[in-house]
Image (cartoon, rainbow, N blue to C red; front, top):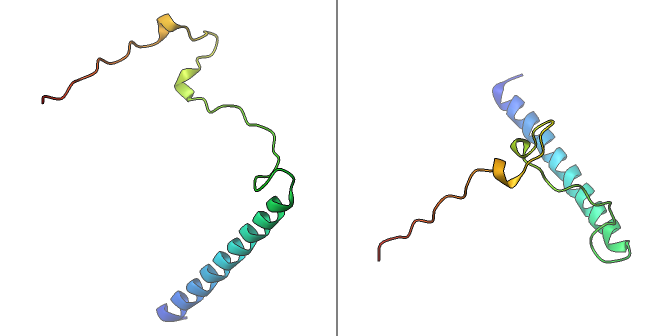
Length: 77
């Protein structure tokens, strides 16, 4: 298989994948619009995003453990 044939094959596969994805999104959007309450599907709420460094095992985070806020720097006028 020549390089050009490989590129054409890859392009064809990629195009088919994009078309499938686009059709799936279209189907999901159509399904969501049929749900009560508008466009968005009814889902359970996910827990808030937590940064890995905000949780330390065994020690609760308190205000005294947090770093002090950085001072604001004013730009010269």
